[in-house]
Length: 283
Image: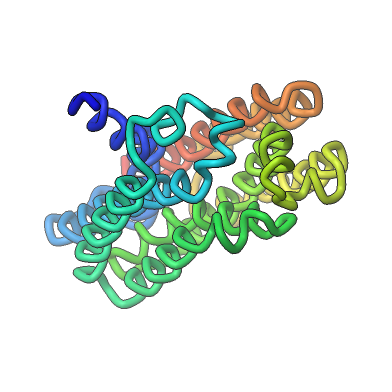
């Protein structure tokens, strides 16, 4: 096996774009609390961002290790199915990344360490324990996605109302996206014997449940403006994000692959609305 191909495979295991995005979301969690960080806050925020990137990459790698037989059907071009990385190599790589993430997390305040411990346990147990339970895996991934904002805020010892609202909105939206992804992956999951929500109750019913979650998030999205923690700039920007996600939900009934991709775009736009809204307050 070519060394460059093996290195490429290891990088692919971490889903680097997803890992970096998770790190950015952690920074956003801190930013919506303090605005421009003071000099003394940069070190813990940097540690939190680094721990998030590393733990996300580790979680992706260990998920691919446990999912290698499913991926042989659903995603044969991934690193393990195509032979770029051995299953044992992927497992060892994830352990190294988890260890580095834990080292960074231990430098943070107690609340941030508690969130990190919960998240690390969730990442390790997701595939083997929760993924095959109808709805449970979706909720867990939703929590993990939203918790990046909480982790960023906790890294500087503060959990503002805005950070909590951002966590809730991101978590609920992620649950919807995960349900849509399960609809997309029904064939491989059924072959592996998993009981995801679409397999247990049907695809359209699952999408309807996902829609209820998303509509709840959209209805709740003006809360930071109503509570006065973010201004009109935030409200103006979050409305298009809501529109993109609602469009993606409707699209997913006909094309789950496109729907889950577009809902992710809407979530990024929503996160940007928090950043720009908070920046407007600073200026």
